Image (cartoon, rainbow, N blue to C red):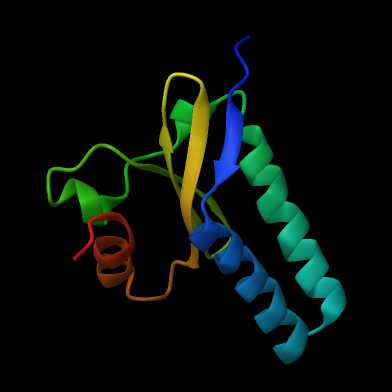
Length: 109
């Protein structure tokens, strides 16, 4: 089975750090570690099955089928698959205004 390299953009790395920091400050450091590990497992799984993710509905509404997403609880991991790797652009709580966030981060709006 083909193995894809997983690359996180600087923004995605900042997203992951921000999520862990927020949970550690507002809940518990142990919970922050657990959530970070679960997100990292979801990221790692993209190495073998990257095309299993759905296209984000907000982008589909614009006719964009370039990006895919997988979920862990409320968090949405938005990425793009190329021939040899998976590039993660966004890790965010899906309860946010995702339409605006996706447009700004991925479409330069």
